[in-house]
Image (cartoon, rainbow, N blue to C red; front, side, top):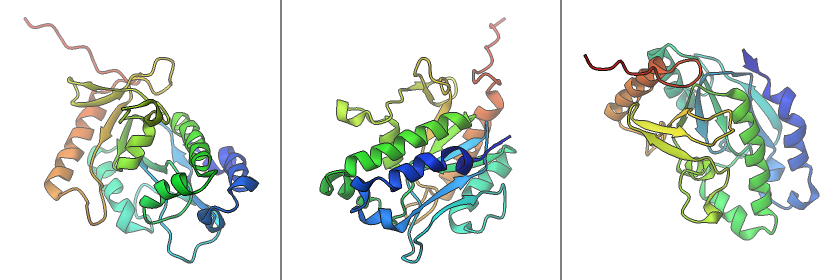
Length: 232
């Protein structure tokens, strides 16, 4: 089953973009880009924000396909993992504004009076999207996305979306441990970038595919792993 992100969340995202206190933030005038028609219970790849080519200036929603997506440079790796695991995939960015340089996020927070709130409001919507998808596994290949999810909580200010993660030695990766969350026990892979100049090397990518496949095959429908049989 697919979730129509545009239908469910367009009003909330537009409320952010139409808020007068954000109008002086440069990226607001570029509009936004959001993936829609997301597959529920999919293998979800989480990024930080869509890139900007100095021509876009619209608010638009783009569909994702299981294979042969137009932006091959970015989505082909996701398709490869999907083919290897025989499991449907999806992708979301935690922020919706378009900017190629990730450093710009910190500049917005630091230099604009309403910058922190601008980022925070987008993250709150993304959290709702994330929990609506209820992915089987989550793959996070961006350090800023990792921070915003709450993986690196050294001080109260680092909590952001405040997910708690605990390494599960049985499956070799983290699980979300927030009590009461629909995502509790969801396996999460924190990994290097899958594309770009600092992308994961081929050998590590092959191991990642194998690891994701192993975890997906071991997961029950409730997100737990099968109980181990006692030794004879």
